[in-house]
Each structure stands twice: as structure tokens, then as C-alpha cells.
Image 1 (tube, rainbow, N blue to C red):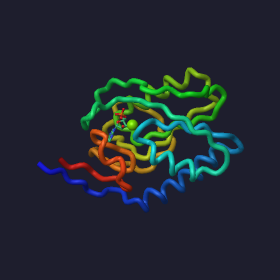
Image 2 (cartoon, rainbow, N blue to C red):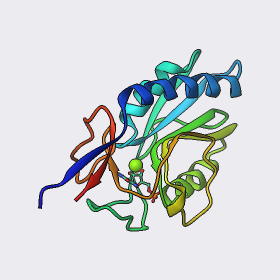
Image 3 (cartoon, rainbow, N blue to C red):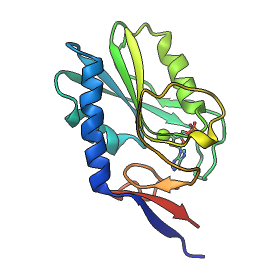
Length: 173
Ligand code: IMP
Ligand code: MG
């Protein structure tokens, strides 16, 4: 009954990819402050490293959402558990997620934030699991595309555990 963690993406590859993403994000937003919106909790490590890879002005906001309830498959229902503290009207926004799986969470976030009048909204996700998509969502910056397996580490959890792993691993029950 003991679970195995199979390393999938080592810390060095994550760091190298984030450095590229930071440059790309700045190149797509020349001369403007970027409001980076971290989706809690899973994005906290990715966000911390990504903002340090984006040259120039950045603001940091957080949004809490819950869609999973401790298991390894989505409940389909998304709810905001902590809203933004600041207005995003007129801001160039970048939503930062740990993983886009079914797409339901990102679709909900995009619809919720779009009505607040941002100048633009782009999406950065460390991981993308396109094979499990239920709704088409635009992901402008993808760190790594992965197969349909449940992963943990580098912010991603299973029942709140494993977020502190410095790499991404496949959880094999
Ligand atoms: P979606 O709404 O199905 O796209 O799922 C988005 C959220 O589900 C992510 O932000 C994660 O919190 C969680 N999630 C999806 N796949 C995984 C996984 O493989 N490991 C850990 N969390 C996951
Ligand atoms: Mg998440």
C-alpha cells in the first residue's frame, strides 16, 4: 500500500525553463507593469521563481480557488476561496497556475477576471495536461506538457502533502 514518487521533471530543468518563460513574458509586454496573479496554493513556488525571471515592473496578487477536494480527480465545481485585494482594471494581467488539467478552473478564472476590465489577460502554467482537457482554454506560456498522470511537487499537492518537493514527480499509489 506504499506510494511511489517517480521523478518526472528535475529542479534544474524547471529553473532553466522558467528563465526562458520570464524573458518571453517580458518580450510580450514591453514597457508595462505586469500584474501577476498567482492561483493559490499550487502556484506559489512557480510564481516565486517566475517573477524573479521577469525583468522590469511586476505586481503580485493572489487568488484562492478550490476545485479538487483532496483526491486525484477534479470535482468539476470551482469556487473562489480568496479574492484579489486590488482592482485589475486597465492592468496587463498574467494568471499563474501550477497545472491546467480539465481546463475548468482556468475557464472560470478567465470569465471571472475578464469582466473586471483588465487591459489584457494572459495565462502561464508550469504544467499542461492537454489529454485531459474538457474545455478549450488559451494557455499562452506552458512550462512543460505532461502525460495524463497525477503529479506532485514544486507546489502541487495530494491532500496538502508533497508541495515542498523541489522537483515534479508522478504519484504512483
Ligand atoms: P482543472 O480545473 O481540471 O484544469 O484543474 C486545475 C487544478 O487541479 C490545478 O490548479 C491543480 O490544483 C489541480 N490538479 C490538476 N491535475 C493535478 C495533478 O496532477 N496534481 C496535482 N494537482 C492537480
Ligand atoms: Mg491549482
